[in-house]
Length: 373
Ligand SMILES: Cc1cc2nc3c(=O)[nH]c(=O)nc-3n(C[C@H](O)[C@H](O)[C@H](O)COP(=O)(O)O)c2cc1C
Figure 1 (tube, rainbow, N blue to C red):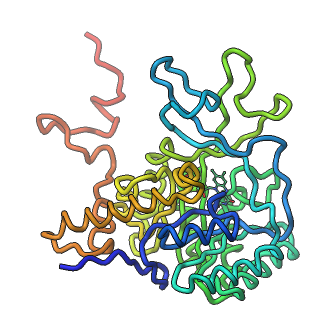
Figure 2 (cartoon, rainbow, N blue to C red; figure 1 turned 90 degrees about the vertical axis):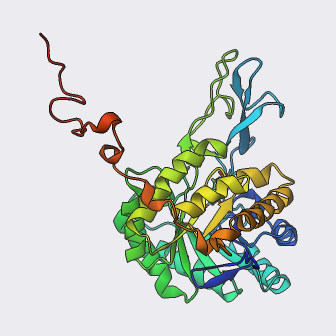
Figure 3 (cartoon, rainbow, N blue to C red; figure 1 turned 90 degrees about the horizontal axis):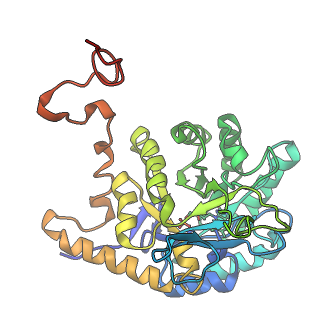
């Protein structure tokens, strides 16, 4: 039985379901061309804005590692430790739209059969800002991009009307999605932040605005650790730090929980899973929760900047998984997608020992006061 690694997602065909997410691996034409040569099924560009941004004076990303001999958890003790997470406070692309436009066209011409998704971001506080969304969207569509991903999730925004501050506001994220949808014909994905109470609410809002898919998650708001010797944050500029974003292995279970909140409420909708993926076993979690594609950042950054070995292993892992499950009739991702979505239930639905009933924390047991004799 022949296996098929391709997927159809938001109406687009992907040679395989593995994408590089919007981040340093997709920050330049050269990187994206290298990524396609390496075999990635698609890329989401580093987020493009109208105007150049200026990053902090110093490193923008570091990697948090665990050193078993000393039990140290640090970003500054070399590569011998075990990777736990990435931490970054990098802003969107420092190249403006004008820089990107000819490059997007050239990339698309060089790889017409690969999916090129443009990540875009603007403010939302005025008509002028909404026009920026329209301009960005139309320019990327005009260069042949296959889809757009709206960055409604950048965690390091001072502006109240940008990034994750849009993604935390149901009305705003619905409205911005609608504005972009009305401006273009290509599919529009919305990338959401994990830092809300129930991400299914924001997913519902962007779907109401017309989103064709939700990508999640972006990084988790967090701080670098404090060095116990110097008492300085391990990443700082002049001793100061601001909230940044955690990615990599540490966020896989958290991002899964967010994804499950959404896929359970919207089983028919399209989702792209992001967070903590390095090997196929990690990606499989997202497929089993209902995702049609997955995206990778941290693992690719640590593998020759665009993840040539990561994509090789992901493809090999998917092939082996399909071969191993051929007896079930599985030939492609679609055959096992969403298979574990319904296994996530309320705590009270989990079996208790000896068939005793659980009262959900009410009455007679659970969190009730113990009976005193
Ligand atoms: C240095 C760095 C820069 C990032 N820049 C962007 C960005 O411009 N736009 C965006 O949507 N996400 C951005 N992200 C988030 C990633 O695309 C991804 O959502 C996140 O890192 C989780 O995936 P991972 O666990 O594979 O790293 C960035 C992440 C890192 C580490």
